[in-house]
Length: 393
Image (tube, rainbow, N blue to C red):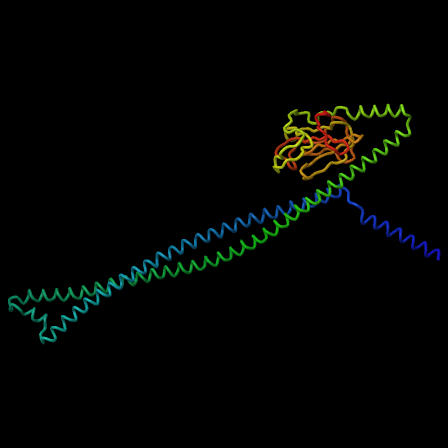
């Protein structure tokens, strides 16, 4: 029985331990890591989007070129159709002309037959034997003229029909070319449609990543506040315990000493430049256009310029990435709730846990994160609350 009870207790402890592990709250560092992973996935999706958009632009250009070729061919077909209509009209006129001339000749022959007299023979012997030769030449010329006139009309008609055939052949070839181009355009358009669909899917994915980033950033801020509050409470408890274990005079002396150290001057963090491009306080954000607190000062400097520790301390954060707009940045703890923050760096030279000394080079000036140019964003915080840095420099 005792063994059974003991087993139940052991199992209960294991279950409770596992539950605490599973449901343990995430730290700000956990959320920051998730943000970095999400940002990495978003950057990859953006690269894919850029690649797809490049292909889409090329495909659209190809469709435009084929459409232009189709328009040109259609115009040529229209022109050829007009030429065929003109040739049909000319052929019709020649047929009418030929019919009139053949009718005229038929009427002349019919009249000679009905009068039982040969019109050409009468003309030949009229005027007597003396004029026979000259009359013969004249009749011969009239007959040749009649035949030549009819043959000319026939030849002209044939030339028109031959030309019409050539134009119809050219038109048929153009129509075949137009049909071929339309088929090619349909294939190109399918490619455009597929790329457009892919573009939309990737953009939706990027939008979802943005939402995740915003949510993670909010959770990180909430976790940071909790951690800072917990640190503040722990520091207060530690100070209270220390004070209670010391004498009253010793406590007073310690308090005076602590106050003097906490309010001491920090070293200027950017030796190469003294120019402040944006001060501490509320302002219109240069990128987002919204009014918000600028929690530090911006020191304009050349990219790659040295950034030094404003005071000795321990590096509690050294992070690469977008980081909610800070870009690559460092946080140094100086004790007594004091921290300094160095943002938008192009390079970081120290890691979390490193002990740094006053004036030690820790990073390089850059323009990472939400930045419009090379500068150092420098903050002073006491128990997590930002303070005007110039009051401590």
